[in-house]
Amino acid sequence: MIRSLMLAYSFYYPLTMSLFWIVGGIAYFLRWERKTAKHTDPPKLTRWPKATLVVPCHNEGSQVRETLEYAANQDYPDFEIIAIDDGSADDTGRILDELTGVYPQLRVLHFPRNQGKAMGLRMAALAANSDFLICIDGDALLDRYATRWLMWHLVTGPRVGAVTGNPRIRNRSTLLGRLQVGEFSSIIGLIKRAQRIYGRIFTVSGVIAGFRISALHHVGYWNTDMVTEDIDVSWRLQMDFWDIRYEPNALCWILMPETLRGLWKQRLRWAQGGVEVAGRYMGLMWKWHRRRMWLVLIEFSLSVLWSYVMLAVLLLSLCGLVIALPPALHMPGPMPGWYGVILSALCIVQFVVSLVIDRRYEEQIGRQFFWIIWYPLVFWMIGMMTTVVALPKVLAKGARTRAVWESPDRGIQ
Image 1: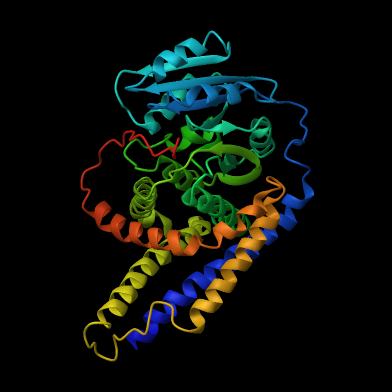
Image 2 (image 1 turned 120 degrees about the horizontal axis):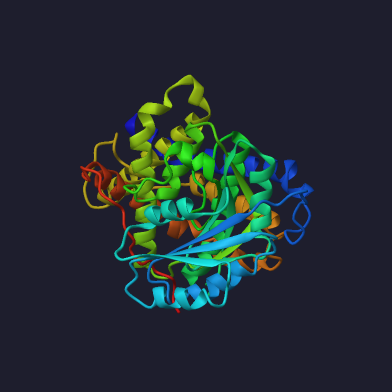
């Protein structure tokens, strides 16, 4: 009985979620995406209120010039830029001060020591001379029309508290870089489309998102003690009945880890952030007026359970090779027989669907198909292991402490 339940769950959970994402992604495309013009032709409004572009930086000296060049080149009639030098140990602060003479709309906030991204975003929100924030990372290259696409949602939707954009991978010279192109297209992008259809989004993309300052003020801005401030603020905004939308036309080009060590650290932080947020707000979710968040919480909880079940299946499979296990615990393999064939076939269908949709934003993305079919082998294992490690890490964390910057892996330069 135990054996059958474990094998069934290890198979049916990814099968169900993949179908869930495919159907939701297609529905989103048919309902909204196919009706829009190219991303270079954003919708028109009678008014375009001022926007504040926020760029928090910590040791971004090698990237920040290019980031601000793209930010200052936005096709938007009225905007300012606030850059935060958050206790950088390199020349980030000096470069930012120099750039104030190049871009008159740029202001710089300097922190004498590392305060963390959440604190930087808080200070920028308080210093902003507008009602809307467009937040990007210090290595992100914002598409020329991204601000218009994000602001269109914030201006036309009075209950829209945030809009998440569409990050695209810049560094594709290695296998891990190419795999992540597929991940952001076939997994992250498709998930956000499906979640938008089904009601609630797990998180905005911390690398590109637009916010209504009044909504942030209502929920207390970003918490400074959460490892992933983007997941935390997304849940609190939606628990306070603000809507979060996904805008795939708001493109942003980012650098991602291209080493296993860097990838592990990044994904462990993401997993830890999800566990922290779910643990902190789970008790507040089970009220009828917050029922639209139930699906997000249930899906996350099932994914954590799946990680532990998969780990148990793998360990029992390996043990069965060297010792005799009771029949109830003997595993023929983690994905025996036709299980693996069905999952592999559905995975390819999911990739094809996402690539067809994403051709609107990258015409040549189909060239990545050969690489992204290897996605499950690498990222399912990393996702499983980071979740397994994150849960006890969060439980052992104890008292709340401020989350500060750690310079991420920006890929092979």
